[in-house]
Amino acid sequence: MSQKVRKAVIPVAGAAIEFLPVTKGIPKGMMPIIDKPLLLYQVEEAVASGIEEVIIVVNKGREAIEKFFEREPMYENYLISKKLPNVASEIRKITTLAKYTFVYQSEQRGLGHAILQVKDAVGDEPFLIILGDDIIMNEGGDPASLQVIKAYEKLNAPIIGVQEVSENEVSKYGIIEPQKSQGRYIKVRSMVEKPVKDAPSRYAALGRYVITPDIFNLLKTTIPGLDGEIQLTDALRRQKNLVAYNFVGKRYDVGTRVGYLEAVIDIALHRDDMKDALKEYIKNKKIED
Ligand code: G1P
View 1 (cartoon, protein in one colour):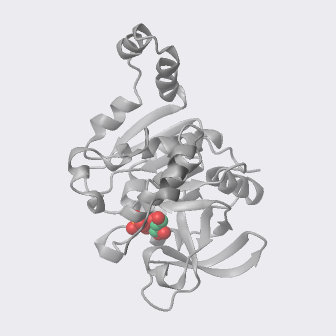
View 2 (cartoon, rainbow, N blue to C red):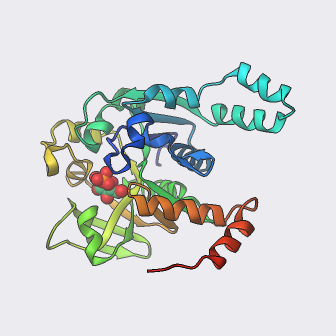
């Protein structure tokens, strides 16, 4: 029997250089998609997938993130006094969605290093990882996190959420070497971080993993790899029984400016309060080369 996945880790301590100068002033996770910070989309996905505790790995700008998830009764009262009780309760709800734990990553030594920092907060149980740069929408179906959790529960093996990317994109991701596949499940023989040539497949790890606690020992002995960073991929390569799950959903790479913009537009086009006006604007827009 597999153990229940109760905790999610969201590392948001990356430098976010692509979004300078704004990320000099605010942490990347607090950048808005319309009126909600990026990080809240991921927290909501975790909670909708049954997660009870969200562990956020923070660095610069941690105060803004911590404050966002903290209750502020005076502010709620102010909104109520302005006759906005619904807004007040929405703001309060964010603070109660899950138990929030913050872990500080003081050095930028890579994703594997960020995950190593949560060893004590996670303890001896399987956990979900959601990467802050990947927003995945699956309207009407299970969120991507729930899909990888269900795969974990079914197989009792660590799971990497993957999707196929185009040939010219494999060098941007952790790429699996499949051993054999059955439906959406792919047994993983090996894995390589951002291959520039001879990629073993086009299946890329896209920011959703269910990992077992033995990863911490593997990470401790993982030597710095690509870019001199401790790569999660390098530790996972040594993990036994690794399975990839080809999840369903549209994924946005909000680590890039265009990916971020695509997410903003698509999410707005799905919101009842905005879609008609935005469609009208797009329809009338003349695009000149
Ligand atoms: C990280 C991981 C990579 C994964 C990617 C998904 O890379 O190292 O294996 O495929 O996230 O977004 P990053 O984009 O942080 O360089």
